[in-house]
Image (tube, rainbow, N blue to C red; front, top):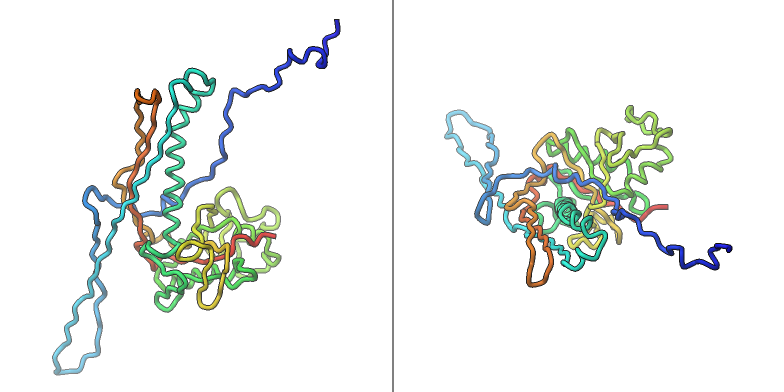
Length: 322
């Protein structure tokens, strides 16, 4: 008797299921390390007093001295974000599914990861201006005469090399120009990797070997630009006060697709401050009423811009890839 696929197809399993579950590829989350986290055990508002500088005046002999008071102010942190994530698996699903144990074991790690992505987004969103206590949208946000927010004037809104030089200028005018890092959109990485005149830049002794190896390596550029180490992130906020992607600063407009690339120095206090009221915490219990195991993550934290002088935002157009 001949055994063929045509005559005995019922003996063939039409679909074979794997004993593994495909996971989503995840990127690194780095912004948390650049926040100055403070202890805020109770209450609703955390206040930090500030004191200004002394004044020096010309003195005329044999006249009364002029006494000046020190300017004072205060910085306040409040408005806690209360976040939650809930998952459950029913008793029947536990009994019937081959993958039930693998699914249930992944609940807590997936909730922690999701919370990390939300926190990363919220930290970098401080650069979007608005209610963060930092920059004002559609403004140069000048400090000591130097801008700390601008839309690039590059062709079609792409980044230019002079933007990086301008970042250093603005930070140095604010006395924070050392150990600068930049968190930029992948479109900025693309633009730098495809610059035709890359090797002809004058003050770039650390750019040797770019032609052979390119500039990007995993999450971090292994070459820096004018002393600025660049990191890549997909969590940067869109431009504009409402994060619409559109912003005009000093008559230079990006009509859509604008993204806020963030620069600051790690040699001084971070531009961002935050406080945990409750670190991410996962709890689980069996709900007899619904016959299911429930997993709940909750956390509370507050974030704000603390050092606006140590924050520069360069807005580029993220969809100019050709």
